[in-house]
Image 1: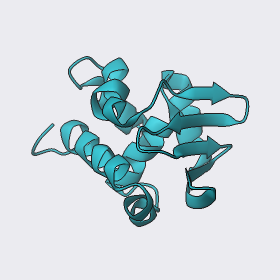
Image 2 (image 1 turned 135 degrees about the vertical axis):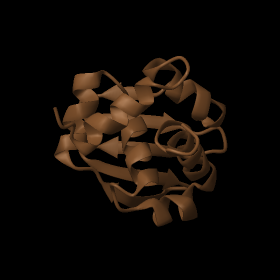
Image 3 (image 1 turned 180 degrees about the vertical axis):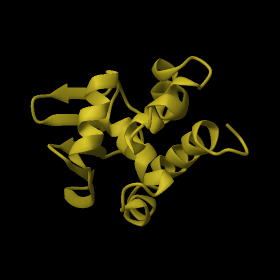
Length: 132
């Protein structure tokens, strides 16, 4: 059976020590001011350094100092796969940005370099054939 790109990313995340449940706290936990907030509109991560990362529908945005910066538009297939897997859509979106499967990583790096670094670390540990 051939896996879609996003199914493959979820499969790779499941191979991490601690599995899917460990990915968010292990890689992004130190950056978060609290647990992710979910609503009918999407998901929001409040960051320890101030600001937040938000997913509204399929739009990923950085909210810093009263300014909202669009980072990426996540494909519907990614949203659906995160739902099927029962994982954070933001988490899967950040991994997809780090792997280059979704455009916008340069904007993320500029706005939230520590979040970008954590996403790249997650990519190296889960997807990189040399490391993971």
